[in-house]
Image 1: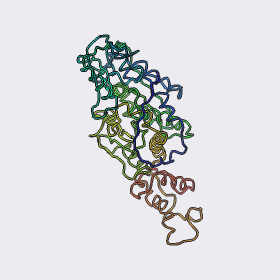
Image 2 (image 1 turned 90 degrees about the vertical axis):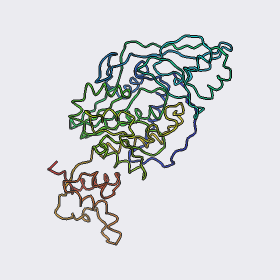
Image 3 (image 1 turned 180 degrees about the vertical axis):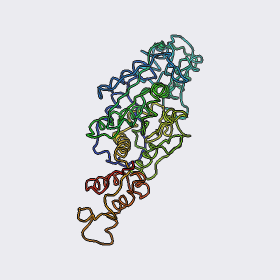
Image 4 (image 1 turned 120 degrees about the vertical axis):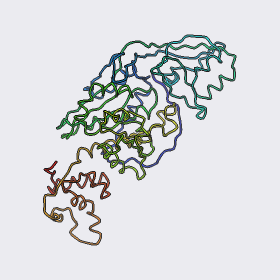
Length: 453
């Protein structure tokens, strides 16, 4: 079902995304465009259609099913919801004033079937709009309490209120019955059983940044991981439905994840052109927190750093007491911090190729840092002679030290006790610069991994 994106103008940073990612991608926006019109929820054919699209990109994706009624810690997998059609039709004019087929946000997600005639006064209690965003259709759901409803712009609602005596035919053709909940898992083996996890979600209908930017970036990150000739870690990509999906997955895999996960990142709202954001773990200092907090400095001087008290995505589950996995969430503009969030204004006009590329580069830099991060030690006593290796200017001036400052600082602190991220933070070396200098020193055989690690 193709649903046209509503146009919206938004003002975002003009800063171009760093090219630390290596090359410019053109698939990111295409993935969002292809997936935008699919009606998704916690369960149902829309989730399966989305997973099948991802499986087309990565045939080794495993689609996992949980049955309705299954227990997952304190939760129960809900019944499966599917919807074919929904509308509000004015009986007098025969015109559909609200039509699910024009925008799937028009229906409260998980609405039970309904087929009634009613006055506007009766109907109004089932309508949802946002008075201070009169052109926006809100995203509303009721997953665990049976109800029905419609969402519309406040302008539309006011038009209906202008004729309060009109009668309407209200129709929702949906099913809510035992079925299954589906999630996707893609595992790419590396040299170690230690894992880096990328988690994102696929349960929201037509919202581009909140929903589709994460899966789009994850799809392309998986392509990058696969082309690595050497992978220090195993990579696990999870395409989940939010909250109940991560809880269900953890209920089956927590023991293994607590043993193997080195770092995990939740990707969400990562395709707009706003600044870059991190939502930290509960402790705020795990390995993923450190990596993200260092990587973000490549892209902005004033990052938006949020504590776990401002959580809202699946970091809630991965960092919950008793789970405590080393996760954090990375975004462009954080969920809930932009007015288009959870409305029809979060559409294909709100995200951009540049915004998605910047989000991809941020996530990719985190992975590059993890692959290279280690504790190193110098192969020489005292400073090495860099000049004979072509690493130091042969003409010495008072500016010479500034030219090689990053390299010299990296050598000075490579004592087997400081990892690369710590050195970069301490010496104020940008992530891209420290990776570049590290590669030079390793190529020249001037650094080696510390035997102590």
